[in-house]
Image (cartoon, rainbow over all chains, first blue to last red; front, side):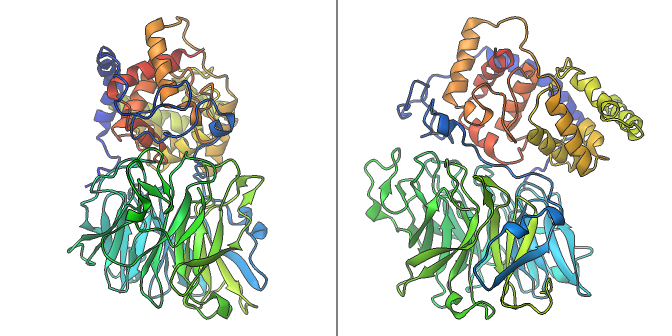
Length: 429
Length: 188
């Protein structure tokens, strides 16, 4: 359904030369009047139209003017240029490079035969890290995809979520050298670029969970946005199970309660310190998590919150820091880490851009109370921020069969491995 | 026209393969983009003073065909990662483009300026629209190229490296693009 950048060349060239004419015509139109219902601007600048990603950003404020999203370098860092030596883990833990050279390495998934699949957002590729005869090798599994951020693996099949469709490659680990093209299983998805990239996962109910983010920083929802949907593994039987989800890029099911926990990114430009990103839990189908009316469970949105009440929405079970961009999260069920890590949520915070002093750019451990709410949050992997600048940014975490933990870094195009205790053979999984 | 441009691009790439210095290697690029940082060719951007991280991303996207324009895809095809960095760094040091000599109709300039303020273009592109890091210098870029690019971001035919510009362009009316381009090209 997506038209990949494959416009016929002649059209492209012709378009380039014709656009000047069409735009002259457009210039004859009167300027659009200011949009009705727009909120009053903070300063002298004219009001932003509804839906602008910059609503809330103060005009003429020097500190705010310095803030913009941080795009990662397009070229993956060479293995010897990775910041591994600067990364800090708690005593007894070790961190090493698992694989490098994967531009914009994002979401992670593990195959039955030990292949690690890696999605990307800013390039068109899904990678496979293959263990072959004791040597680790990175292959490009699929290319020409559009923002293939989401990947999940089940029973031999790899599921890939692009911006507006989900597809699959069956028996993928048997065909790593010559994989077939992905076949589409679900494409009834909006094509918005803003928050269009997706994380996907397969639940204990054997269903595929596919979210759709808000099509902007802070906008009213349509029925097709700000939700989590689940469907059968062939794309049939899709149903919306949660609404009011601004943008979740990581979720997992609690090992004991089997409840779905998901991270959700809070809006930009409201202030330095609120709202915080959320850790949420779905306890029943049909819950509404507040976006865009109620933020972090206890703040009514300055624009959309009028006449609303936070008590009408499901509050988060934990707060994960302002603008921290909490993305990938998995519960730790392995036996390699100390017992105190059993069933904790390990959360990758990609790190803030909409804040003067960076928050996040780390992995944190979230421990839960008996009632399933968050009890505490403590740092686990740090060192990605140096002088308030990123030298790496963690995106997703993945537990390996031996209990070690992989971490992807889209800034450097690499995956690291965290182990505990003395390792007999470093660099082997 | 397509054939001619493709052949031209190919000939230039071949010619540049054996060249030694960066000045020699970049000459074919500047044949279209302007030797002094300012392009004289329709819909072809001026490169002078462009932010190196932005140029690096664009060259990478052309090489990987994440951004489609055949002459540029051909030009970028043989370039190594180091080449991309070399060209980006060189371009950043070239003189920035100058505003056109005519000052612009005051009414249109005012409309354009109001739009730039309203949509907070300076949030990412800097107060003087000179850009920073991965966000390009747009001040005094060619008007036709600015209008074309904004329209392409608006209708999603140019997919950005990330989604920022699609997000920004969503609430901007197509009719406002011409005034934005007019003003930014003539900014003093």
